Length: 143
Length: 181
Image (cartoon, rainbow over all chains, first blue to last red; front, side):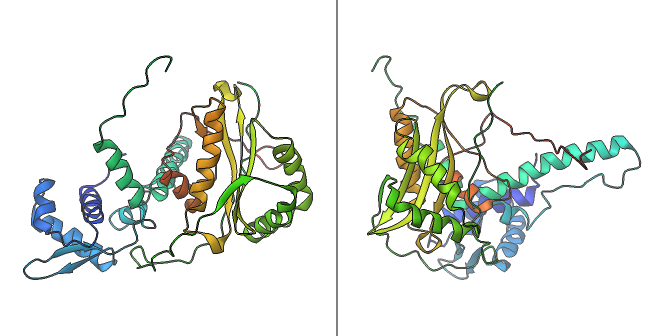
């Protein structure tokens, strides 16, 4: 499954801000980190702000701050602001093949939705942290 | 492939209040320590009441059977633990080591976990899962597994927060009987 560019950008931004709670992070910093234009990111951030996930502070030292609950906000909550993860269905297809394909794609979509809906921002930050940490030392055989 | 799947009895909590994605929440209270220990017969009325609170069903006979199987008779590979806050039972977890089902080496199944809705957000579920995990590890198990409805988002999120991910088994089902296609 591929997420649209705006959705990915929103997830990058949310994770960036949530990892630095209470801090005002300049949008330009996030844009530069992910190789995106600040203008493009601004549109995404305005949607996140409208939904009460981030808030902006203008002026010197300004930026964006994560204001949602990271233990409640899920990836699905963010994704649904920008796209429909259930995808387009082939419902109404004329043939049995259309309907069979629609059934299989729906099964895939339902699993994707359940996965995104079960992973909170806090859980994602934990995964990121684990991936950044060096792997634990391997156990010695017989030890 | 042989055997049958353990009954997934993961509780669906009361429907959460619909909230905007980013709504602010009050910070959780400072956690009080709870004790996690094997269930005792005297705990059963509270366990049954807790289950009834969450599911809306009072199933005393069922719970007495579970107690006989996982409580008194379950030492070693079956575990029925409760979380106790002072004198009150505020949660329970039930798990069992099962081997070679679905071609899988021994693994620890967690098939029921519940926390009193009034005691949530205090790390009680985390403490109970850690306790049952420790018992599985003592039994030499290296995989802990569970199964629940995909729309049970709250409990799915809980297990995810504990580091659990999708496993290599895929549950499949078929509607049978009258009216099935």
